[in-house]
Amino acid sequence: MKGDDSRTTPFWIACKNGHSEIVKYLLSVKSVKGFDVNHQNGFEETPLFMACRGGHHEVVKLLISNIDVKVNEPDVNETTPLGKACRKGHADVVKVLLDDKRVDVNRMNIFGESPLHAARTEEVMELLLNNRRIERNKETMEGETLLYLASGRGSSKIVKLLLNDPRVDVNQAIETYEESPFHVACKQGNIQIVKLFLQEKRVKTDQVDFKGRTPFCIACEKGHMEVVKYILASGREGNLNAKDKNGKTVIDVTRESENEERIFGNEEIAQQRKKNCGMIVKLLESFKDDPSEIRKQLRVELGLAGNFFFVFFFFFKKKKKTKIKNKKRF
Image: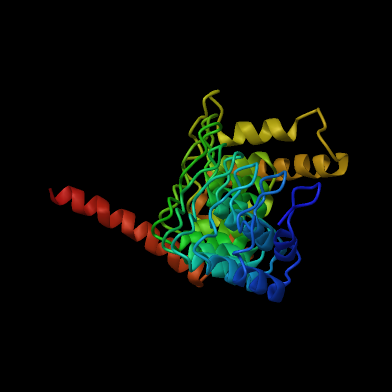
């Protein structure tokens, strides 16, 4: 079969457009001279790649059932058919590919993305995470794990899935800024995701970034009042007297943010942030004077008194006390 000027063939075009009957027929008469099930166009995209990109799962089934089809053949960017299907959100195609043991489910492209990193829909991410072959802690070129990315994107469902998976390193930070996923959640001010992290006992809430600042400090600096209140109510705020690498406490950092004269981005948002920082400084000062009373007030205000959140806090503190007692025995 001769291709046109774009280096495509009739078979390639049929796969691209999802014409399953034509694809089935052409596969049955592949003895035709020049027929190539793995023919690539100018961007090195194979018929399987195009079918995956278009979400044509019936065509994909036909192709991977053929032993001559190269299931991991990448395009010019080293993106595999699975990687492209994940990025496009074609769940039906992803299901078909994951069922084939020949498919490399962790292969990365030139941008340092695996299929898991490339996934943009929760449905596809769920499919990948439920596959035993997936490397859940795999990093991008920038050192970002899926948990880190999901925390920044606000994908609470995926964050919950990852936090519930014991194989996931919930504290794995990116090397550049030494930011953990919890740092990112606090920076973004996503209260739903912050709550999920606070409920997971494996999360190191006192982990510091390259500036020596905790996630709690970042939330204060960014003026995320609701996040600050929830962390204080949880009892996982850490040492408020601890200093970062510049010798500043969380109150110092927050006060600086309140008095910041430069305006970055939207002025209205910047002014609200400064206002929030002022209120957070007052809250932190009151908390330092009487932590038990302020924590109690916050729990009532946030509707946490007596619920699971409070039970979790009690369990977490009790567990720490038990460890101390056990040490004393020896």
